[in-house]
Length: 183
Image 1 (spheres, rainbow, N blue to C red):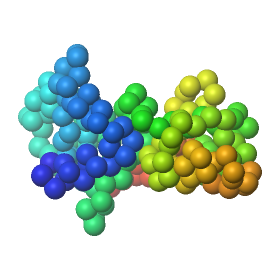
Image 2: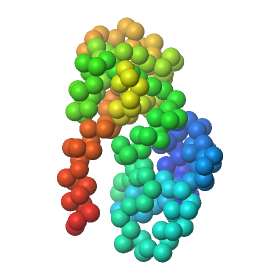
Image 3: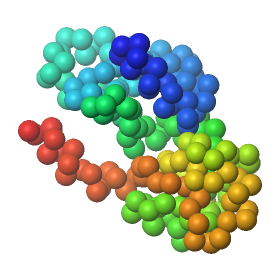
Image 4: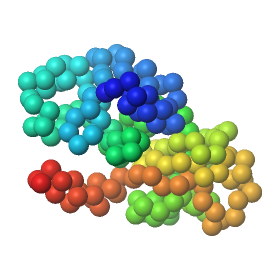
């Protein structure tokens, strides 16, 4: 990654995990790093796997490590749902949804006040949040449409979290990803 790409990536990750980015890199089991591979995708990979992948030409490398997201043509970074495992480990702000609202979120809809079960105290508006089921299973992530205090006075149909990605994308987007690699 270039210095500018690294800065954009870290800013996006910091929206969700704050200063825990250092914990992603300096893990206790092995050091990890971020690498740009084919089609502007950023991968989170252990150094041993990264060194082994150096023997494969960049254009022939389909995937290695965990795909965190990709850079758009305008230089913005968009997180993919595959980053959820790492975001959920270090999330600063969390939202739990009621069982009745889980399917709505997994179909790509925003989280409404009526579906909100719990929210991390002092969550600011527009902060990156990870959405969990009531049994603490990470379902996806999004942006807080309202702060914690504003949620208390919100009407039941008001948006609490704006949807960005959910685990249902594995099924909805699988045809796109497979087709993209076959081209």
